[in-house]
Length: 288
Ligand code: PXG
Image (cartoon, rainbow, N blue to C red; front, side, top):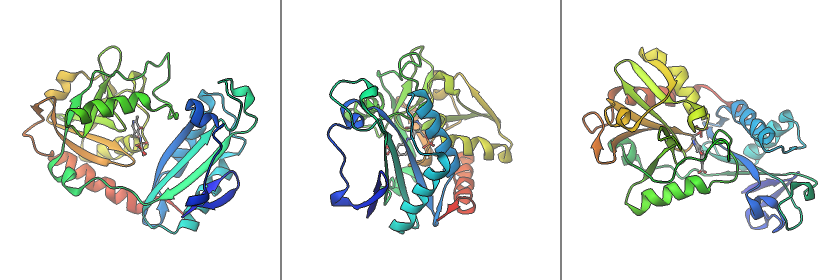
């Protein structure tokens, strides 16, 4: 494995960063999780655009133009030679003093890891997931923007812990007002009639790259797409439900808080969207 850190490549054992990096000390940084499918990077441009938007939000000067970042990612992919895999791109505030002021960090650090993907078991896709709505609410936009992919993931981790403690694989998170926001690391969708709905990003959902891809392909199935308010009763009463994310791709949800969704089996339209999404991952991508 060859890991990129600030202009150099290191073997896994030697890929180390300083204990004074503010990414470690304060979670001060941003990241992207990206996938390689069939020797191509899926939607790299969209991931990099989101990364640079995240940097703007935390007022971080990445110090590397986006075109250069694209080359860094593709070169790391090339050196690792995985035809299918997972890219983790982190940009931290860099090394500074103890004390959270970012001004003590003169230079951001860029880390790019390419690894095998820990894929969810196939049975999850065949039988669908059961979700639990957790008491941990999604971050308030006025405190830490949930539309930004920062290295502060404790909000999501607390949600995941809560779900797992009760024996569920995934958590459903509400925003402070009680509207459905997203899962701990995935976006959520419901289907009712010919409407495909997902929480609007301003309600606490990350603008997911997979979410955007699903919104693009859904009209092919005569589904009208809505980015809107969704309540828990909307989810309980939906005909179909699924999650989207880079790691999970598109995964059916068959139960929420003990209520069966539809007939309790992955929905037929969900299954068609899954198939179509897989085709998209074969057709598209940046070669390296
Ligand atoms: N919401 C949250 C909070 C996420 O973290 C998504 C939605 C889905 O977005 P994308 O762009 O992936 O469709 C995410 C994505 C990881 C990991 O290592 C997490 C994500 C993606 C890839 C890897 O845990 N989260």
